[in-house]
Image (cartoon, rainbow, N blue to C red; front, side):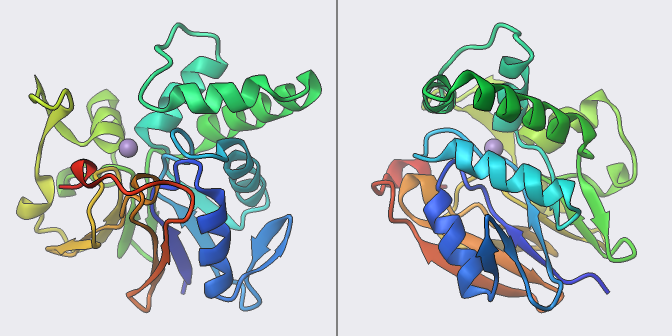
Length: 243
Ligand SMILES: [Mn+2]
């Protein structure tokens, strides 16, 4: 059986990620390795807003390349991917911090980061079905009927959630709460919407506890169903970001 530690949205909070893995018994030799062969999994949104997005990219790309981790892309990953391809994207909502870090790198390192991230993104599944279909890892969620399928609509859903197309007064997109209606058998572990504590609902687990908004980084250990936390140390607390 797969034993996996699923990490919520990191958003460049490398130090918290490092401390959280150490808490779980990983030892670091450039990348975190678990003595019992446990794997890591990432629900996406590795970069943006936090202080060390580039280092997070380096570690995650290396882990995935060595088959020590699963990675599901998030909406911020999608935007960074499009930036690296040279497509016109607006440098806001945090992308500007990742681009600023990137611009400080030597050209040879820029090339390496860019190529490895493009490869990571292009080779990653939209979401991961693990443990004989008992576990699904996705960035923003998935509907039961879509598990095992892939199309443009599902891609939008796993990256952005169940968006209505409306924009709220806060300027953020309106999202329907798909988890309240989820009746599927597979456990869904996801992130995307910052919450102060992990939100458990109908066998769905939102583990984006907004480390980049000064709360904490969460890991969900499977199959133990145990949460581990690392308090934010690199970013100030912003209570307006939590639902
Ligand atoms: Mn997201």
